[in-house]
Image (cartoon, rainbow, N blue to C red):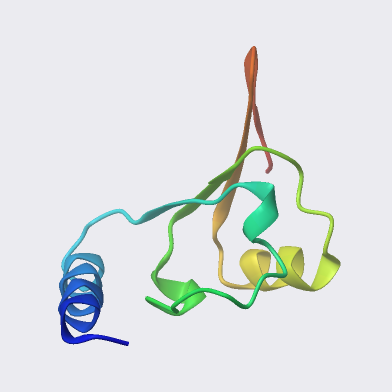
Length: 82
């Protein structure tokens, strides 16, 4: 990774740590994908907004264990989990 990218990640992490509410916008293609940079642990997240229900039970349980609210945003409506 280059220096500019490392600075970008550091800035994003600083923003996360200092935020009152943290949202992660994640489309369904990003789940079970290891080609990303980890910005924070799940316990930093307040909400995950995604386009499809999460089919991977391990991911779903990890989000629930960390009390992350999940919102499914689909064209024409919003579906929330409880």
